Length: 232
Image (tube, rainbow, N blue to C red):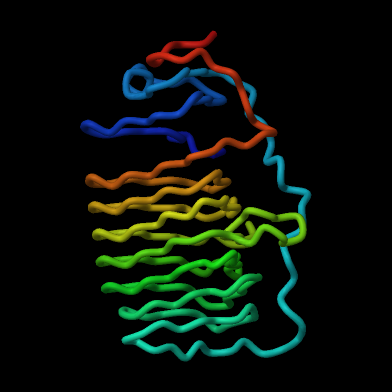
């Protein structure tokens, strides 16, 4: 996660950051160091986005975006394509293998379930992803998408986008995210687990948890295990 904000990393109350390395181009306050389980490196050289030169998929053809008609009490399969958006509060929607492009946002409420069956979501710049209540987003990403195999969510950096996961909502996908202008916020008791992520910002509130289960090869380091320590 890279940030140009003067307050790039902050915590409150009993919050903790558990990562191999926290790096900042400027100084890191002692409070952040004490709340970080990993190495802490102030005045560091920050790596550039290793994926900035990769092109995101173009919008599919010249076809108009389609609406998704789903069964609110059952299971709806959605083929790859270009869609206006997805808003529902009950039932299960399964995105079939391939690329699914949304020119509008995705909003899951209540007990809605969105499953990825080897599928990748691409959000148009500026569109949002929101989960609330007991909604869930799970599954596996496409492994064959050109330049982006293993990524389940893509969004360009053309416009900032707020993503919000709240309530008891769950996001659990064994795959990666690339959205360098998007800010992911988890609040209440939300749970988020994903592979790697390039994001514009991450915010956690309440008892929410955000977990990244993998690392980015181009940025990999070999820190010494143990409690937080200052690297000079």
